[in-house]
Image 1 (cartoon, rainbow, N blue to C red):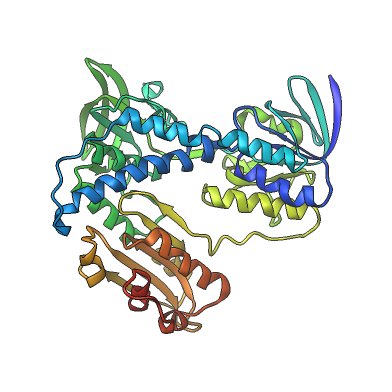
Image 2 (image 1 turned 120 degrees about the vertical axis):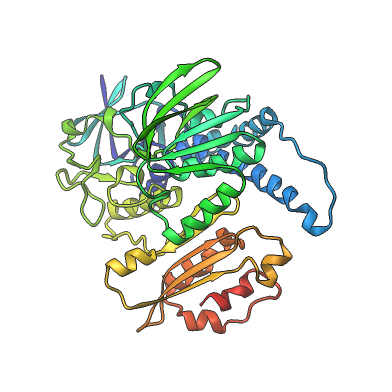
Length: 449
């Protein structure tokens, strides 16, 4: 095997890995990036971007459902599922090539192969050994193994985004983000949907009151969302699949065309031989210091879904990669996730930034909580919103925003006002005193503070 030398070698060509290349190439470092599948990673090819095409169709179906409130007469819509999947594939088809070209134009050596550690400063591919002063693990995530008999019969979001035949019925195992987002698309397209969630909570990372709004809207459109439903096995049945689960102390069963993994993702680290690189792992993710450097091998950094202690979100991965790139060139930056917003793309969406009320209470913060149901407000009634709700958590002493949670009411856009306020120390009073264009959803911000 030939040996090639670089300043930086990056494992993974998703948002995190690409983020590393900016600061390091600007500093004149030689950079190699390894990506065995397609540049762009999950977000571009199997996640955020293609998913949003399906969500947009669900939003259109929701708008048609509300047409009568605007005195518009329409017939019952029918979604061409195969056409929708073809549209989704067409929209993303050229993105990996474009992103690969951007990397090459930036001066990055792009290697279309997988890599694994063969030393603290060495990565092996099928053809070469790459030695580097700095190695970055940005290998993304994979679907969480469930250890469930018949698990191999499930499909994942990858297949949801590829299958051109719309199933007549689906069961999601797990009530996480993937389950609820795709459930809203399927249900509005006419598929019968069930979500089986073990335990007592759906969507555990979101504020419980906000989740209650989403669950109520999900049930309104016909989604059978069940808590305390513990899957036991999946088996083949005539005409489909049977999910056997325990609920309320009794064994029950459901039959569906498809059973879909909706129980979250874990770091994808198994194939890179971390022990050979002396890279320590805790709870399935790489153990790092405040600067995202491995605590056991100072040559190694981790970012994106491989990094412990935060949400697995595309913008966070990009941010992580940029911080790691800066730290490689000596910045010593500590990442700050406190004002990065996130969204659940149900219809309507749930948007959040900062602390949930439960987190603020656990931290013992002296805060006031402003909670509003807005669907009967003039703006909500104007657009015939089925759900419009907000909760804002405000520090009593400083009047600063600690967290904001919005369902509907263009929350996926409004949340950025709160994120900017949190990042730059704009108080709740200052947001309330601002003058907003009227009538807009933004002008309602004054009344949720």
